[in-house]
Image (cartoon, rainbow, N blue to C red; front, top):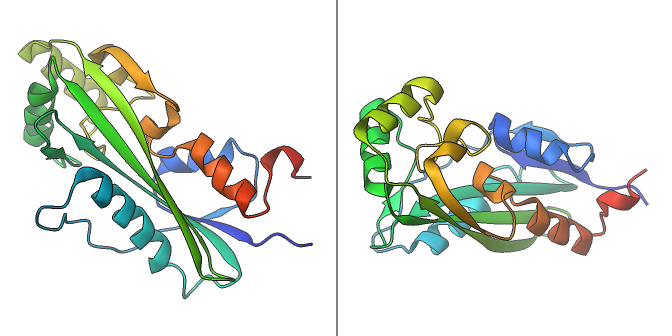
Length: 198
């Protein structure tokens, strides 16, 4: 039985390097979707909707495929959402708001089988406790790493680890942007087992 093509609906080098760890052949394609939150949309609902939208956006051009969509949203204790900062000033403001707080990162995951049009989704939660950060520490971090394309304004796989006092969750890969444990579960349900892949 031939496996369907695996397509990662992302141009993110972080997600690409994570998926490569499963040692499955795949290719990347960048979906073009509007990532704006709907009025009153909760963080988890937003993360799942965006992940599913990314997968669906590539469906027409990728028949006979399994399409992986993923998107991450960060939520402060008051429920406000932190997206990708996009600029130094926005990143500085985000880290100042996160300082001393427990921030919840919700990574939506979608697996669309275009052969059957079956879409499976889930959301991986991960808690990050931030140290109390001085303005100088925030400025120093942003100067070194410039994480302006990352939700929450840090790179978990880099110096961002120095911002935290503790982490709590099932899969630290979800903080980088692709929850591999949950993805492995969905792939196995779809007949693909990375451990048995020739």
